[in-house]
Length: 171
Image 1: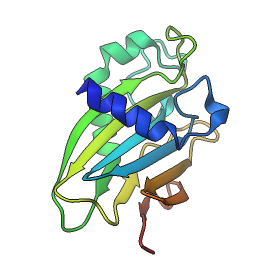
Image 2: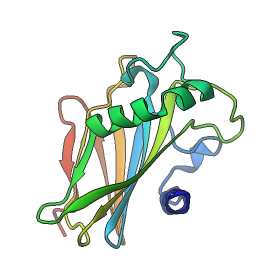
Image 3: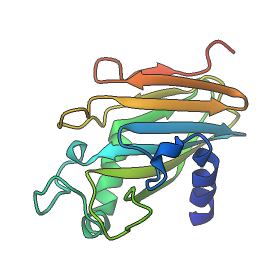
Image 4: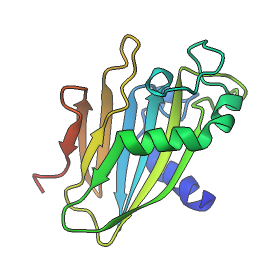
């Protein structure tokens, strides 16, 4: 499973802005890359969107809080993030949590990076993504979402008033 998630990071890394050199993904961003029958996601979830995880109430998620609440965070992610592709079965194959810092792994953060892979019975043509993991703090009410499938790339903004989008409908 770790190999698949490392592959997801490598596949998505090409679509992440270079301004995030010290972070896996900037806050309030998400990416999806379709490769064969799988969709690979990287989603930066604000700490304030996660309930009962910030044990010390500092508004940040520490490495120990991630470790202590890992299964609960993954259940919250599963409730707040959905993808489907019509007429094809799917399986949530892997989910992995990490803090965004690549330069100081011991630091707490005001967001968490979720790596997620969904496998489909066939290549998803028009995947629909729904996200309901918006934070309570200022500026945490939107996700800049970038999706790619082969040479096709689409960028959208998902917000509480429009949390669902179907990608690649023009192709």
